[in-house]
Image 1 (cartoon, rainbow, N blue to C red):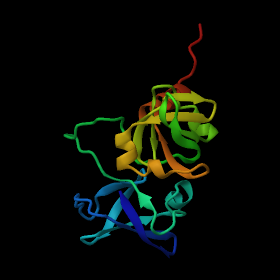
Image 2: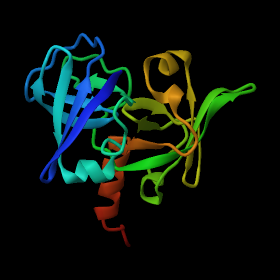
Image 3: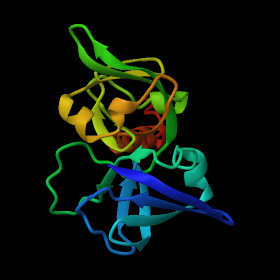
Image 4: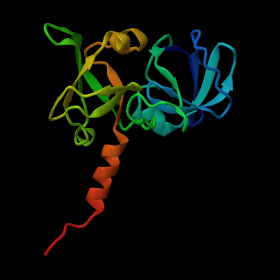
Length: 194
């Protein structure tokens, strides 16, 4: 996890500075880093900080422009063709934000995070399907209409910002890219008649 150190506006671009907080990964200029699930490009760096430029689309579609200085964020470097993939494919293309409905331990169920999504994103949600919440690849435990529930294991609670989420907080959401591709193909394919 990193921390938002500074944010400055330069015309239509917002410069976001993230404190690495001891993160040992040392990206180069031009490398892609997921910040709370948003794929951003390193434009400047020091030993302790990474700087990224955000265009207006990123600022208006994600939570990064509204998180206060000092907020913790999830950091992840990009996978390579030789990387072992332990979750689903994540592109860092946040579709929308969702609203936290509940985030607590429930008797007999463990720790449950409930999120309300947009209607557009909800069509990609299926039980046992994948979703990315603030850059964390997760499996959907339950879904109904625009609500999804995720069971969080202790490792996820310890190593990400998800344990700190409160009711009403906004989170960045990215649906499974395979579900989006299949949906787009089906929408473009004319029905078979005969």
